[in-house]
Image (cartoon, rainbow, N blue to C red; front, top):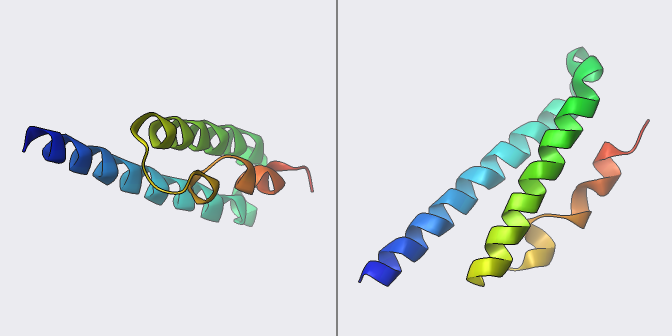
Length: 78
């Protein structure tokens, strides 16, 4: 039971990270935050790394859809 409980906590944490990631991606599109784009991009990259590390470490989900390379295009200069 304890193992299942821990796994569900990790999955819940991953879900919260995905929400934060989506929020940052939405901020990248906001013109009023254009001056903060580089900072937001750094935050997005850090969250992607955390998601990827947790996914690989605990063998959860599909790593291609969870984080990493999918958002590199978002951080490229316009």
